[in-house]
Image (cartoon, rainbow, N blue to C red; front, side, top):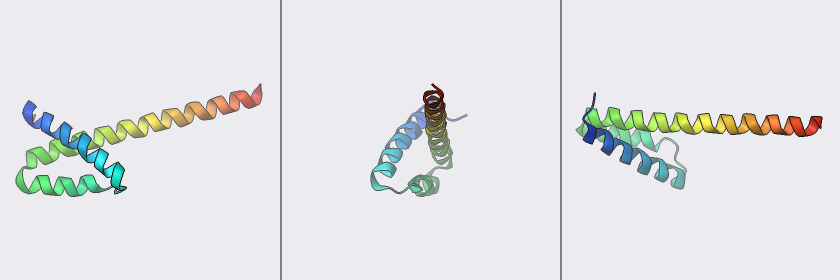
Length: 80
């Protein structure tokens, strides 16, 4: 398991990277960032990629739930 300082750094970098990624519209920026980090620290690279993937999965899960609920509500409104 990674040092807590490494996890903190990875989490901060992940948040910043996702914000930049969204702003510039480059959805694979995190992969380039992983390469940059991996050249110096495999530990930080792995922690960063884990942080990115969990955040992206969370975003996809929330999107799925929102779409599912919207479809249900639309169907319920149509049935009324």
